[in-house]
Image (tube, helix red, strand yellow):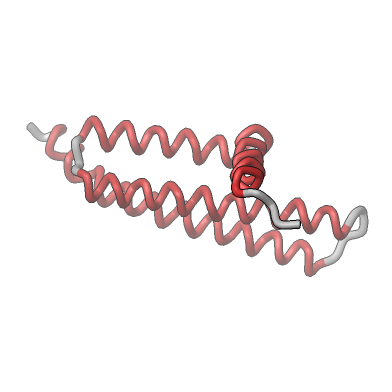
Length: 122
């Protein structure tokens, strides 16, 4: 039986909510996202740059959610036995999150450092 649109959104929202409650890295990304948006507002970097910051935030959250889902699934399948392939898959998914976070950091530095430098050198 097909699921309703409401149940699909409810399940997705529940997944995001659980990730923020249970995953330390989601909390770290959330704090970084709030800081970036506050800084974008304080420095008045403009709508286009703020939109790019929002895209970076969404990208990091999405990759972190996929990483978390993969880790949970692998832990469920592997149970108590250790398989090198499971560890490798989890490491690669974590690497994807690291790449996304580093990309977002570079974008933030690119957008925030020039106006901060101008404020500091006035």
